[in-house]
Amino acid sequence: MSPYPRFSAADDARRSTAPDDDAVSPLRPPTLPSNGSRPQAGLPGEATRRRGSVELRRGQATGPQSDNMLLDSPDSGGFTRTDPWRVLRIQSEFVEGFGTLADLGPAISVFGSARTARDSAFYSIGEEVGRRLVASGFAVITGGGPGAMEAANKGACEAGGVSVGLGIELPFEQGMNEWVDLGINFRYFFARKTMFVKYASGFVVLPGGFGTLDELFEAMTLVQTGKVTSFPIVLIGVDYWQPLLDWVEGTLVTAGTVSEKDLSLLQLVDTAEEAVRIVAASAGHEHHAS
Image 1: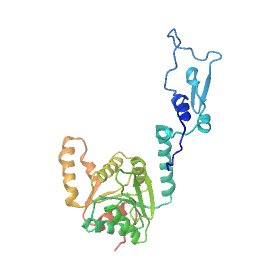
Image 2: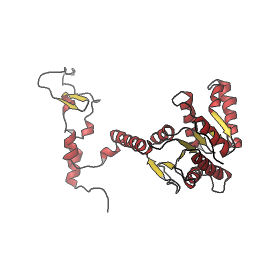
Image 3: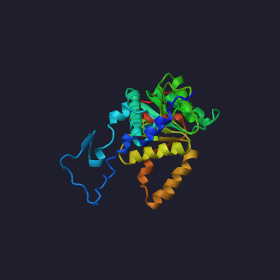
Image 4: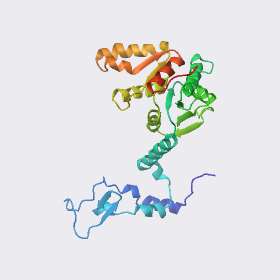
């Protein structure tokens, strides 16, 4: 049985002729008089109506009230596919994220490929990163998926720390890995990415693909532009990342599109111990993991 309400043919006909509340737009120009002149504002007897902060006059003031459309009309579900509704959804994701993570305490975001195999050396390094971050007093935040994200969550969970996953709706289902203790699922990448930065004191980046590069370069841009300060970004895997840094230096720096000092935003290491020592020192936490 369909979870959606069923309507009769008469309901469909009434909806097709009834004015939609959202169709009365303050951006649509009012109908001009037959002589083609524009109506004058404020003429006596002309309809004026306010809808929240919007003031409607003349032809714009016609149509049903918002409460009427809410309470006295069948809900076809159409509004849930409009941009105003999406704004509310976006707002709800920020509210949920802020409310859930506000008391998280010091944390580090760990990024890396969902395709990292469990028998990979980088999976083992991810586990060690999670364990060492917890030993240094940090919660661990990942994208909540498999691969390198799962590894960091597993290390944090087994070390008795707070293991956070920030999932995202994708065309292919990933699901939250089993080592996440505190998980939030997002519809919108930008809301999710805000949480990665707002509640973290730094980034540890394991080898990854486009998603990892997106998160890496956004973090670099935020640091470069002063949007976030004292925010260490550590790449693990010299052989993996060095060609990218060589290209940045040899092409972007040479072309003058970035400055040489921008390269100092990144630190390149090969071990979990080095990575955690750097982010812990920058965030004011003494590293004491063995």
